[in-house]
Image (cartoon, rainbow, N blue to C red; front, top):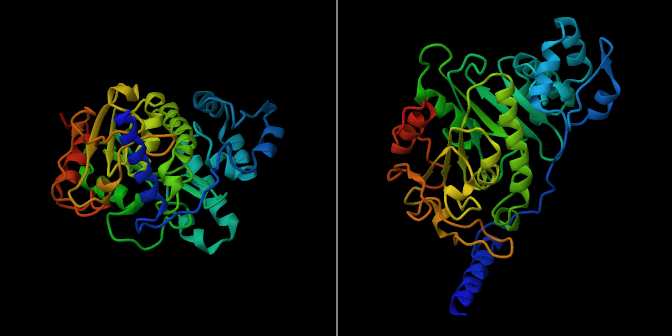
Length: 351
């Protein structure tokens, strides 16, 4: 009975913290963007060379890859011109085709907040303007890469703010650039890094950040995204999961082919132990000494909270050194122990 009482008290504290009454920012409730992108209905109604098009909602990425492999360049470009939003977000479609489709889709919005994303040197692997917008960008040569890493970020990330000025080495793009630079170019394609904002993230630190609703929707999308990488022949990825993004990774873990999962600044992964994640991937965890996430109670009660601390000995993850990390977003700062360890993990050189 006493144990139950302590759980109730801790859960109440968690709600108080994430609700903003302890001085934190309270976030607005977000509607998760799910399902195929806009234009899917018109895509389904179309044909190419007399063939039906794969359903974006149900076709497996390998089926999509096989479909495009059977088309000539003229047919592919016909689909690109007619359905850029679908082609750009279709897991299993050829990478260069997706990059070009997303440039077209971004430009077609006519919105100034997205204009920089349409630059010819950008490699957008996803762009969805619904809601606050979702985007994924590739840094490096994903077609030739020997190793692939995916940055899965937490709250307050979306397509509209993706290119907003930030402190260097923070935010999904900053983290991706820092990791890519830290791994070096290597031989062949080296390491490619994807900054993936492919789900609706919480806004602020409120109840959306305290429950798993958005993370569950994000986990489905992350699992499909990694299946898409596999379908086009990319190496199995390393997932670098920051803050609320580690909740997404925890829920998606058993449904991906990731070689490694790295949780940093994590409030929990909705599992009591690394083994409970149900993945064959190696699980790593890092938390800096001044990261405020340490003040979040590691409980899960009535859907609130995300469970055990991944950096605790009982969780069983491999520890990433982070003694010199500053704050909640400093894990990719040049010269830090964490960035050096992350680069080794990304290249498959960590033990």
